[in-house]
Image (tube, rainbow over the protein chains, first blue to last red):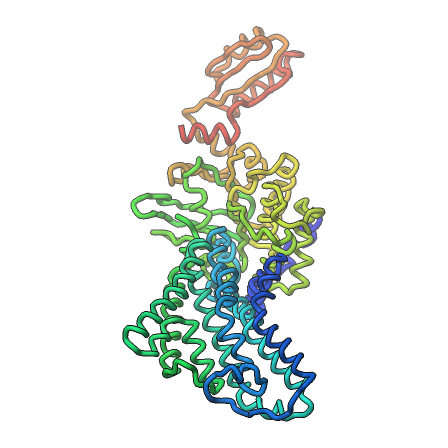
Length: 295
Length: 305
């Protein structure tokens, strides 16, 4: 009984900052994808569009032409996608090519985050520790956000830094610095909102599988619905019903790109914010301490 | 601050079903055992104390504070009856992680997790994944996450389930030591004889959502006046002993066996004084004395019969 005999009362409770308590949860969530080899492979597969773009950039570096077009705006064309001086070059692998990777990452990690704890009965343990349900939610969301940000924020950032470093002079930096902050801000916002929605859906479900079904229904269902309504009503803003499309529209706006299906970014922003509020209100009810115990 | 758990007129209903009815109980520092059949309301009582359930009526306090308050949570250690965890984590990582949620630094949590797992006999296995743990090892990991923060109030829901005899002894010794250190421990268990050995602050008997009794086992047994105490006396001369016992006022009935005599008495103190006198009077008259129904199991049996 060595430990308990040696002054049981040594460990005095000291209030700590919320971040210190939520960080272990966030880190656990972030690492969830990489604990098994399969997860790491899937994550790398999710980065393929950006990796492809990076390879293209490296190949192009050998025959670099320091005559950037300098166009930040305008519609996204094939030429732009291959031109590192345009916003489209950095956004194309994400907003156009990464819908499936986004679905995979969120379905495997984000929407399982809270539902798996609920199914395992682990919420009972959390609720008896010095952490509130909202701090717990915040930790789960933060971890999920970091995971999405690694794929959809850090990857284009690396692409941009590489393009700047490969350029023979500062012209690439000078050309792209005008739209890159907005582009990166947009991507960070998109990752934050979509991970918030996913973790919110996770809080609603009682099992991880149910959460995944709800999430796929929300994303895929809204995608089909938005497409049908757009064709029926001939209103492009109907696309905003789908959170991915709505997020993409806001990012395009912040990056200064005019999308093919143009509509107000405010509509997209308003819709995704409304959706987030609704999900959070429902999650609030499900995250009450009383809900932790099966009765 | 004295470590206590108090239930004042607590009732809990799940819809139309009453899980607990008017329970008033005060658990002082030390180990209090919670005994009851399946569905008696033991887990509900523990979850009320943990702040996981809100009482339908009445009041629950930990160290004078409602259990949902942050400061009450800070002094609470809780070991639930579930054993599904983060299978991919090692035992030490899991315990350290739980301690970090209580505000310990990463380093302190790691050290403390190692210490407490070692104490509970998982020193060699603490780096293995929980997925490979046996039921008993999982129980000890659960216990470690509750003990790691050195709580002042400890709630243990069936902590002995699934443990082998050695592990059971280890765990009961740890819980006993913690109780002696002044921690208020409320522990539910089906292993009544072992619960009796470490529930030094008394036991609470629950049946069909009602608190039947609370106190020390001997104290409770003494109160069951309508139930005579049964004592088995091993003897080399059982017939002689039976004759002498039958003459005593304190002995209600005598039954003779091949090498023993069984008696029933309503006056325990008087009977034991007489038995001591008889045992000393002749060699081999009483070679062994064994109370048959002075244990928790018997008390529980009588109360719920």
